[in-house]
Image 1: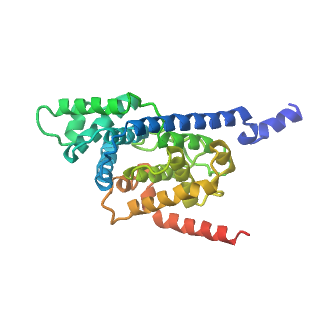
Image 2: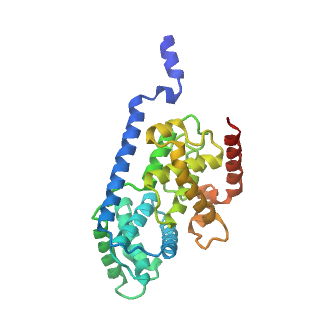
Image 3: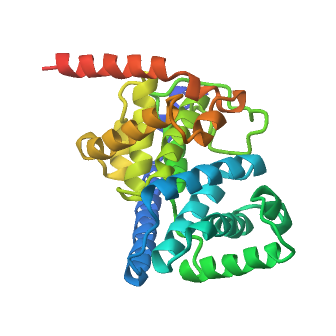
Length: 314
């Protein structure tokens, strides 16, 4: 074997990676961002300006997270369901007593799009504790109304799609610790790519999901990037925002800070035992999600250490 061939085989994966692959990541990111913005603009143009009260919406979405967990569905199903629910309530007024019905309808619609084995309407009727013989037909009519409100489009990217791409990008970064990427019990998710730390993936997801209970204040791509940045920050990864991620997303650390600050406040509020919204905290307090909800003290310590290092830098 020639010296050149030996040198090529010994090179790290990131050195061997063709520039075309990294460029494809950037193109995919930009394409998803444009499609997500187009969906939001379409909903905004049809909006009747009758949004649900923020506190009521938070309770409904928290309940939706719990139902999604009970169904063991894909993460995309949850995020698409919340986006569809928001789109419908922005377009048409919904009585408070009917919000749970429309949230369940949005979840059913999203599951039909993302799941290979979506739940039956009767299953969701049971989980929603809906009474009456006409409960299934009510659910199906609500599903049809939500589909119309979404302009019959469910393939628009959500925040979890951007996070999934960032985890794929992390597979090409040398700054992440190696970890066993075998599937965990009860976990139906392929976000765990080779080379990406399981705890990092679950932590980033938990941060992103705590933001669901509040109406989106930032674009989906910024929310996903900020969640990924915070997850690395909490775990003490250096640097918290890798140059590779910045190159592909076009987002610098400074541009992420406002979104990251808002998401960080929501995360620690949701992880508090005094919070009335418990679905995300209970979900991520289990072994299948690396107990990330039980490690907030360690994350806070790493966060403070990074802040001190930043202050010490000239």
